[in-house]
Length: 347
Image (cartoon, rainbow, N blue to C red):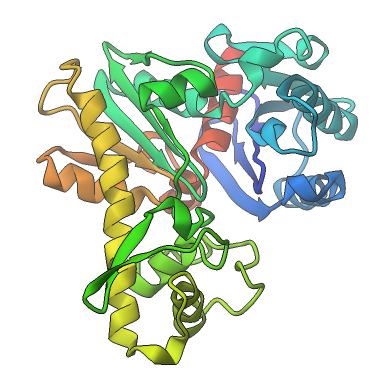
């Protein structure tokens, strides 16, 4: 059945993600644009303009977000209202549907009253798409900043929490990602040169440096400036990592910095895997239920699936692509999902 083409928007605090689905439901284009929203709305304006030129016009748009949390806004409700208003202003003639979580979509004029349901609901859009395709699964979206976890059972999303606070308590939201997480949030101390060395509480390096040194950072994943605004090379990442333990790069051989990065990568993976094991311990999923991975850090989810002897499925395999690499669909799952949900809503 032919439907309206649709553009899905996911407004994050650090990136804008967008996807276009054609009338057949195939994903025609997906993009991610760096957008440090905390630095001001001009970054959002530029990203919206760039994305609109690339994706083209559409009469239907779906919108979800997490950017309402940045400290540009005094609270999340005002952030939601302002972000919806910014998008509405740039799409004056289009039908704009704002995703409000389990309650479905609301119009842009209703966003202020539904702000608590709109705020940071992008994970649920993705998980709902998974639930439409699979009877049971553990959905793991590991992005640049956060990790979202959701159990799908009986073709429905079964989570304990809904808002960020509840999801943090339930272990369904982790503030750890493979690009922007400060090293001091990965470990308080690290093994180095035969000792346990305290990690400095300073933003000298990020998880992108760790995964660049291990060789696992996906190409194009690290779109924002490094901690020191320096180069994004293996050597530069090792230099930044050395600062975290009060050293200079030349104080140890390259292999020592790679070992340190590997240990930190494992420490991050352990935290994510512990949270996944907590959800699996509820006993809601059969052993054959797959792990569905999304986000630029989904390689961690795939490795977890292997260690737990579960099948693994990339999110990008859930929708028909139309000339777009499935990796890009998986990278920007919420934008694709909110486009798909909006298209289903108006069908």
